[in-house]
Image (tube, rainbow, N blue to C red; front, side):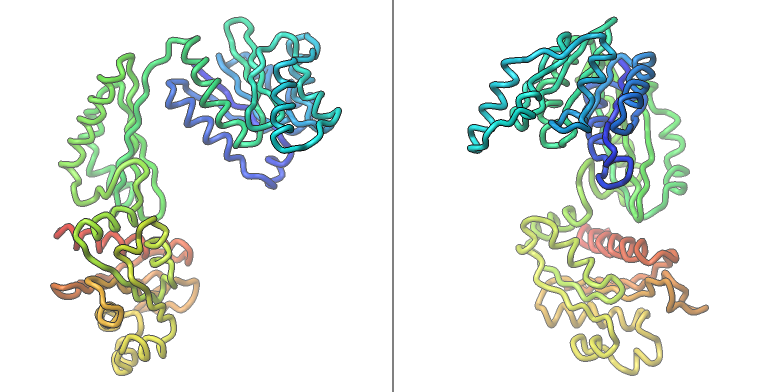
Length: 413
């Protein structure tokens, strides 16, 4: 089965609203065993909508539309679908009673425009919308399915998961698709690909590998497809086990894990506490750590020592070291970590000091130079990294590298 997604709305084309519907819908279809061949965004224009449906109809088995089902004049999807199917609008009592129930629960009067939303193309199967006034519409023609849904995400999503996907699964004999994402940190995409070349070449024909890089992290997505669900899950998990043996130190988690969650789990399991002393990361490291629910069990606080005088006053960094070696140095970052650990009273402390950019670099210390340190019960580990010239990415990558350094310390690697 091949599907196409058509998202309708001027607001999507002018950038006023981010089209989150497309990625979410594609993910749901893919999990159901339905491949998405194309995603289109079109204006609130009858001819544009008609052209998009006609073109998709010639390529796809399933066409999913969102948007243009509201009560105002710019919502023209129903009328366009009537034209496409050569039919007319008729009043659907069940859809109207759904609107009555919804408005009654909110003590809101129903207007004529709201009542018109219960008028649907005669040839469609209505899909009731418990979260809004616009019903969905299911059409069948020439063994193809066209479904029109509201563009509002909290209305479209339950309609898709509760009604549309189950109905598609009943109608078509769909394969089972299983995805497993392995999260790696420490090397870039090209280096990782070189390490995994032999393993990747030996993958079974029904399992595909995708490299999904982002700053500091490379996600490896294994996607298996088979008629038998248990067999494909087992096959993918077997490949993951081989991968773990190949790159054990580079893997920090799976699927939706985050590095800060993994580090937090390790700290909590060991009954350990953490503090941060941040210069170049400016508090972003503490933010990432505290974004995890329950982080108060192990994270105690942070000292953001951006200026040298703050490093000296609150972290007892020696003025002579700042003068001789500079703020971005092993000597300074180690003192930051050690003093933060003592001042806040934790088992571990992470410190960062670097040149995020875009200026401030020198020939000896170019933009992207970062020193990180982990102070703990067994001493202090420090490490220098040379990142890029983009300020935002440098802060993000330094944070990821710091978390990963602590992860490796906690795991004893």
